[in-house]
Image 1: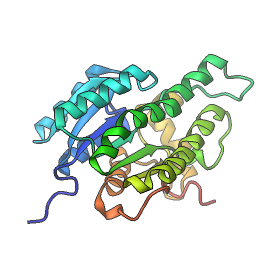
Image 2: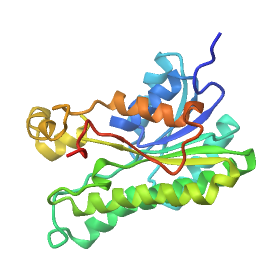
Image 3: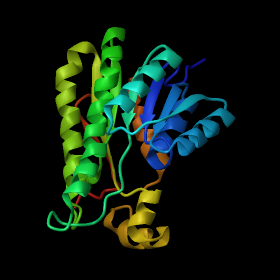
Image 4: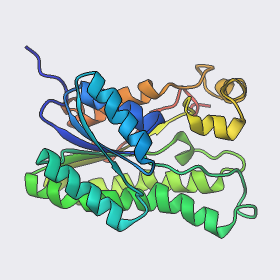
Length: 254
């Protein structure tokens, strides 16, 4: 019998309470992984674990503000204690960012975007890397964005932070290849999550305005991004590191 793609693996997924993070956590669990669901909203993280449990998977939840070193260390230690190992880290946590140019965005808002999107990925990676190195290998995936490659009006903070995430993955891949740790980024296009509702007011408006910007003339679905993350986390991607995987419906093609 063929083993599930992530059988006997343990994963931490940040931002697992909703959207892309939840889709990744639930898919990883269905692929055989034990999943530690970390989110700044503990109730939503717990909801994700319940979804996983109902499907017969293994998961635990923890409140974690990825911008705080103490929280990231606690999450790594708890996952290691619960599962005995950390094979995979997915940095999917992201903060909501308002539209604005660098003139419009207040320094505190800019700082918060980078604290979660970039510092969070750094701190979580720093927290899990010692365990991965000691175990002889691991796999880290940073969720970036197509806007880490191309710009959009009034999205200065988001574009800059996601571009930084793509470069962070490349630099980490160089630093840790000899330790059998693969590091990649995954860049979705616009995906139907609560973030789009906050930006556009409702999902129908998001579909009407943002959908046609993609060659496929629609928005992505969280499960589509989760499938790409599963590929990167699995042995099927064993020859991939330092790459940015675009799953953007053709957004960056033209």
